[in-house]
Image 1 (cartoon, rainbow, N blue to C red):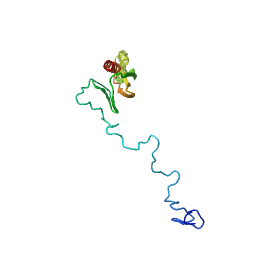
Image 2: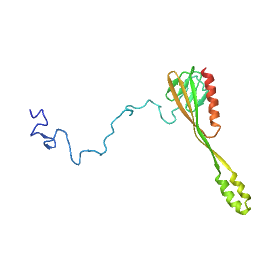
Image 3: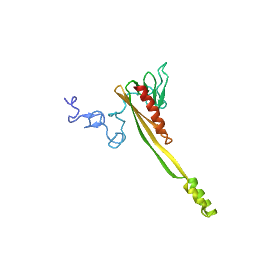
Length: 180
């Protein structure tokens, strides 16, 4: 009976008397707070992703004979459909949404500050006009969302100038015209 029940009195396990089979303690045993091997959890990728998914430079390749009409970020619009990194969406009935997430800041140029101080002293205040020099810097993205066939894809186009939104909006309006 003691062979079937490892917790019976007098049982001698692998590590000595009174211990369960396979149980270790002491310096060789991982304890609370020690690094453990990672356990897969919800959302943790169990298998390798499909080829080309999420890889840098993994842009959609047009189908043979399909000419790209417009490219918006990582979305390619052809006569046959809308190619995205996650698959092809139908062109007919596609809904396009554009959101401007960019901002343009205007501040005094560092060159103007330096010239204003140096020439302000030398030219008795005339150099202070250089403090009126301004520089504009645009940061952020223009977000484009396309929904078709029960699926959707979002791409972010970096905004390098204030005109970026208008350029992307023109491309999306062209794609909307093709989607009708």
